[in-house]
Length: 190
Image 1: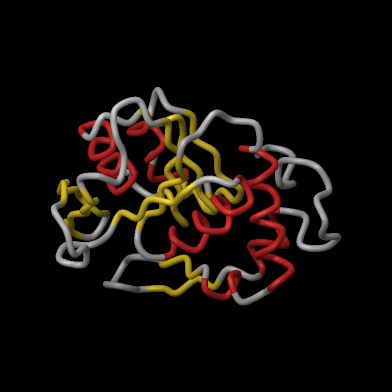
Image 2: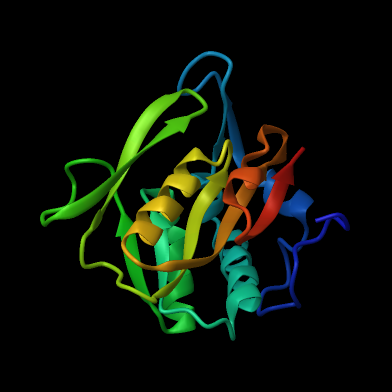
C-alpha cells in the first residue's frame, strides 16, 4: 500500500490505523527458525486488542460483499485471521492442516518453504465443485504454502477467489506464484 495507511475506511477502532502502527506491534525474531531467516511474529499483534481488531476490520471491509462459500485458513496463525473473518462475513471456515492432524480422509499437497519443505492436508469433503473460497494466512513469503493451498482446493473442485494476508514479504516475490487470483495484504516489507 503506497500511501502508508491500511486500506479501507475508519472501521470501529480509532488507533493502530497505519502500516507503521501495525509494524510496531509485530515482533521480528532474527535467525528463527534457522540462521539467516527473519521471522515476523504476529502473536504480539494478536494479543493487542486494538491492533487485532483493526486488522480484522480491514479484512472485513475488503471482502464484505464478495461471493464466497467459505474462508480457508492455513495452520496455524491463518486460523486466527480466517476464523474472525469467516464469522464477520457469516461464512464457514475450512482448515488446512499439517500432516497427520486431520481425523478423516484427506487431500495432501507438498510445498517448498524458504527454509525447507512441508505439506498440508484438507478433509476430502471440506469443499466441493464450484465452491468459491478465500485463502487466508498471516504471512506471504515465497508463496509456496499459499500456492499449495490453491492447488489443493482446486483439485477438490473449488475456485480460489483470492488470497488475503496480514503481512507480505514483497522482496521474496511470493505474490507471483498466486496469480491470476487477487492478493491482498495489509502490511508490506519491501
